[in-house]
Image 1: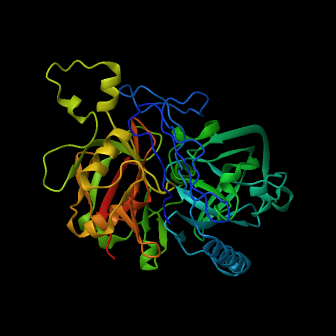
Image 2: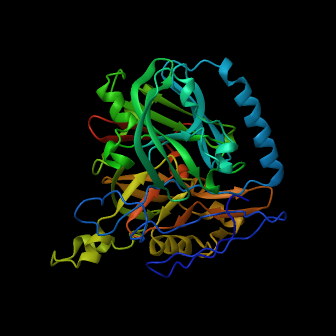
Length: 435
């Protein structure tokens, strides 16, 4: 079951609650330690998305659980085989192949140090730091994964700096060091700062997290600890043919994995790319103007009507609601947004706004949703925004409420669109994926 039956208090503006069912073996089907993104006291804060938005936010990275015991066993065995043979697999010239884990997340490999120590990482457009498990870490999550050995690298440079990062789901703490980071055979960052964790919470334990660490693809403005992000390092060290990268995420139902290409992109999509501007210098976010269903005129984006207020004078809270931003996030498993919009969307298509479930027979009669991002319309068809589990016969929407202001266009959306991220010109190109 891809999503557990989750009771969401969608009618509340500032709190989102979840009640999680348990598998037959007593393990949770879905865990979200903290679903609130905006205005959470004590959350790790970076900045705000401009003057129009009142409220803070954490680094996204929303991961969901849900692998059944047999799938968990198979995935662990598969990962073990891959890790044993990885040192014999050379990294490609400028493309990293990404392994798809049940459409929950994708991971690839990097090398850290000299000689390179190999780690599996999520290439995450929703964060900006690089981290891997540290040798001194005693958390279960660290012990279950590869750990970086400082003494094993001739180029490692320690620092007194320590770091803590709170994600949408998950927390890590650790020490900062500098070393060579190899992303592909031809892409090597000589002096990249990264974190070696000394603490990781249960989010990053097996079998939920089969990756060792994270490789943030956001800008330096979104990096914790004032550390230069790797994409900005790539530009500064002039290691890219062109200052951009392209990401292709294929659906698990199509036996597809994914790939990320640095310095270039799949030019077969060139004529179909729609370019939208990036808002700010934190992550790959853009403006969000609306959500439409089929050919209907109603805008399901809550607060969008405030944009055209005749007086032009809005209260602070209304102004923030009218200035929605959407983050394209390869590190988040679903589409996340404000509860009012998502409840209205679910109700319109006949889905239960609390559990997200929808009768499978109605899928054939559903229409497409259109997300207006950066002033342009991007369409998701019913089979792209509804998950159908043939094993259980359950159909569920691919979204969940977590935030008032910041929308997160996660994996379901990014499986629909091939994306190109232009680092220098701060823009994103999107083209509908070909199957």
